[in-house]
Image (cartoon, rainbow, N blue to C red; front, side):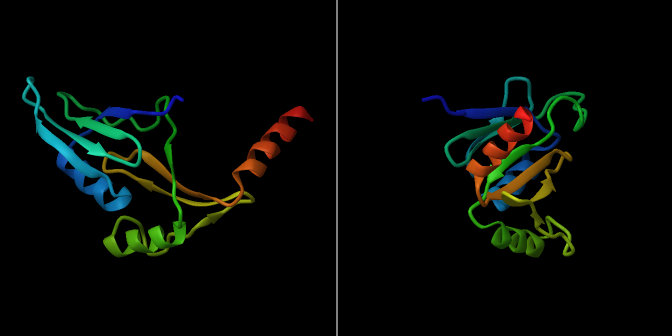
Length: 136
């Protein structure tokens, strides 16, 4: 079996990301420190994977290069949206996007990278829809 073990990315501010991922997606801080180059780093534990984050010199926020967004499966998207509204991570007007096979909303991390928070209503039908759409 192959599964994602970890994601590793640069961020503008490690402490902001520790707070964000802890509040939004219940990541647990498992290590934090300063690397040999003097830059802050942290390791956050998610559900079945880890997120390694570190600062670097001349960090530039480039949110629209080759990576669109990362999607997280959410058991109850309505509950999470209300929680994030109360914490101020999303606007009070934010609504769930209802699609034929999912219910979801998007949020941006502290550096502006987009995160898709998705509750599938029928992922198998979604895959069949894609397959049928490309065959015709």
